Length: 437
Ligand code: BGC
Image (cartoon, helix red, strand yellow):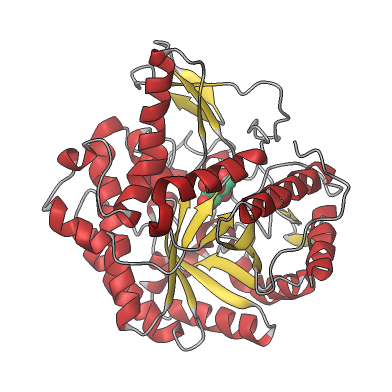
């Protein structure tokens, strides 16, 4: 943990973008007002979501978005990152909701930052199918034509790494496939979809485009070659597989040979220049050689046949989810990215950072955020061009396969009544933003 907790937080440059994030499927509800997504199908299958819940109502943000915009205004954030649901846009009048939301955000002085895909794929689509990438770009054009007069900043995809790994390799998320390394085309087609979406957004006049990729430092369990090699491989899969094609126009470690289609031509699309690079940071991962057994890790069961094993990081606090709290990992990650990618790395925005804790007086969340904001400032001081920071999340919400058991919000949601109650961390973040100004 940061040792300077309690000292005033360092000042960030004028114009630094402070915000909070959510995603459509996790908060909107109103499932009867949109087409089904792969998540609806996944939730309907018994045993997939741990508490047996669904996101049919979630936080009912669809009907209560005005109240949520007021919470954003009260917080004093510059920007709100939300996602547009492709299945909702596919349904009659679906875009009207986002039209109203964007109007309300603008009226409240909060900049709208939509993510165009945050895992809620229409059930009629499939990332194993290359054509899904082209259809995604068509949908992006429709959204950009409608919202582009008020939206300046866009995010193409959220965490294609998790969507590939959890949804298609391990089967822990929708659509629930367990393809292991045969899931690689899912990564390629999402990256292609990103590149095509960048082109579609540019064609619609957008000038401020990024992606939200999840990254974290990988720490080898020891100096033994078996551990360092396993850690390098994990880093390749979780970090470089999704960053190298975007920033360098190439796949790392020969992975391009395993991808479908005309990979060379696709990489030109994938590497379309972006204006900024979004990083979702939660924790580093300690990785060692395979141990020949299943591993329980962060709510996941990792199969024995993976060529690495995930180990506990000892001596640090953990969140209610069991995730290690390591703020300095954020400094390490960002300075490491700058070293790895040099001037190919555009300005960085932290598009997600947060933690799961129970309770309204969430002092642990305040400690977490305080430590990470300081760690971010250290990256800035070390010369990384960081332009913004978004907390995950505004509201407690549907935490995917965990259901409603994990609470990441600055605002508590009582699910039976849907009442919102700001937590201590909401007041802390509001006061921090005031002090920054
Ligand atoms: C995702 C969010 C999720 C959060 C906490 C990120 O991987 O983008 O949708 O709720 O982490 O697990």
